[in-house]
Length: 520
Image (tube, rainbow, N blue to C red):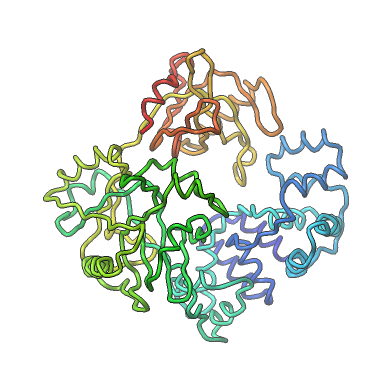
């Protein structure tokens, strides 16, 4: 555990990408199995300990430390793991090994877990406690992404990072076979016949200079539907539905998978499709992040998929083929299989980019986020290759809202109030919350906002500060939708800060009735 703690600390303060890769490579090369595999799993977010959540850790700390002292310390530090690491009264020098922690948590019964954690915290010093708490809660946030870890693995041997990406989702911690392969001591791991997620191909946003310099006649156009990107992976034995981030969401969408009886890997957009029409994203949101689905949801929120692409036709990998050939294969496959709850994404006929500009302007009414433009000769390449796929999203909506509440951020922002709740005025003249946002400002603006919040706090609720209702921000967002979670009854989708409006009085911020008119 001590080596893992040192790695996290050095990664947190490492100045750049290459330094972080070097640190990871050195750790993987010097640490034994399974410790290095569990460290990789922690960075990948592939470890979960249901009996060791934040509430458990807070309760344990509350037994050792005065509650008011803890609350004041947490408010000052801004990070739960760091607060516990510093305030825990014991100071040991015999921390557990990383595999010891993992094995004990996997084998312990839930009531036994708090005593295990308490013992480990007693045995450890502040740095190791910090690593332990971050490991348990899954909140590493040390600036080391899984992509950097894969690059470090690739540099250990003669393997390409794209080869690691290709097999990654068929592997399980602690990845002994992966390390052996990277070091030239074993064969390339293979998932066999399991339905394995394949890395997705992504698009670059079109910027104004791109519009006139690119030969758009080489491209094919489609609507960018407003759902979530998914991948259907089906063999003759098993079938899975994955999100773009490789999360298995099969359990939440049995209506999709029950009708799957083919052998293929397909790329598409998951939507709620009711009476032939595409429902708002807020309908789909009600079915996301669920382990089970009720009969009422299956009836009222029927899921469907608009198919964009085909990656495998049975066991044949067709990703190297040009898009036009893959599309022909997809159309032939669709006509043959007639898959239930699925439809083909229609290709849009156009002559110039200006024809598409008109369609982009009407995207919101078409339940679309905008347009996708794909080169006809482009293979399906994982990642975001430049110049092959472009996305031209509809223009964002905007409104002026008033800052109501603020909370400290995480990681490098843990010392700043950087997470904000914004509201608009309702019919009674009250501010009601409609959005939370924590991006879109500069470092200079963050410093200003943080000072303003500290000087204008009127109430505290744990780590949250209520502020005077004076500071106005212009927010950009993709859509407004009904919400039972907000007192306003409305929530904004993908809100972000466009600019700070110190020039505008709070009384002139937008009204709730104006926001409600934007709901589709």
